[in-house]
Length: 396
Image 1 (tube, helix red, strand yellow):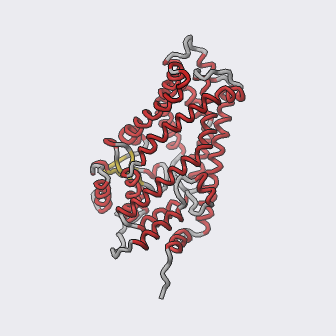
Image 2: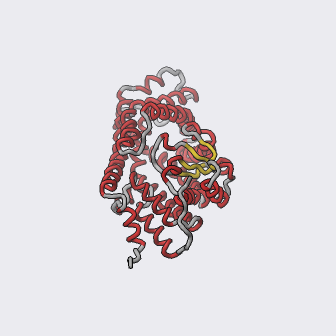
Image 3: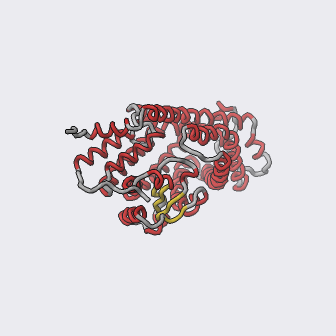
């Protein structure tokens, strides 16, 4: 008679089933990501030094008789965004394309990657340029409290992005189509009904274009909210796994996690702008820039301060995200009740997120609880809430 495994043993067995080679590969990729995060700060400093020493923005600003007016500010801000992207392009290709392909996490051709990067940069240049122009207007008009108003502007931009992202921006990068009739659509319609998302907003998209990762998401806000599942999920997941993962994503929406970011992001933006107000002069001096805070040619200074502060605040934002992920897992278990499927789907993500990090590594770098920990919670739920249903069929 076979002994019944404890939840901890079941979770460990699932992770061990990946094999030592896959686990070692996942650990190498995850550790590399930590170094990429740190390297990104060094690259941002290097980009800023190059731009300041070559006076790239100074030359552009010098072409305008009144560089502090709207159009000159917008153009200099846009130039900064474009130039910084171009200077850092080799690093971006290495981190976002080469590494993904070398770890078999993407098969996207370089040409397609660069085309999508250019499209994203074009959108970011327009929206980012307008945002930065607004920030400079607030610096000049609101005095010492500019950082408070700028944080509010960041909140407005966040809301607009949440509303406009799904219907206007995301379709530029992927092809979204209704999920075809069948078991998967029926299951997703039930989940959509539970979270008050209309059934005509359930989509299948070609996520395999960018990545071979199994994923689904519930994005948007209010009238733009929708459920989207990647084609990879239908190819590699069972129906139960699709239900469990989509239930998790629906949990983020139902539990209002998006509103946390609507509140938290502006507060973090206010903190950043407050610290930038104090750190701008010494940072500019260290970089060799003579720009003032209210001049867009000082944007390289903004970038350096932002990258360093962003790195320092990462453990805090990661902790907030991990809490939300654990809550969404619980929501899926309660509403969908597919603990085995949730656990096996989570184990599939271990190829790009090492499932057994140390407590310190998880606290500092992980945006999700470790896979083994999440699988353990699913198995604990299974033990506490047994069910007699037959296993779910494979998704078709």
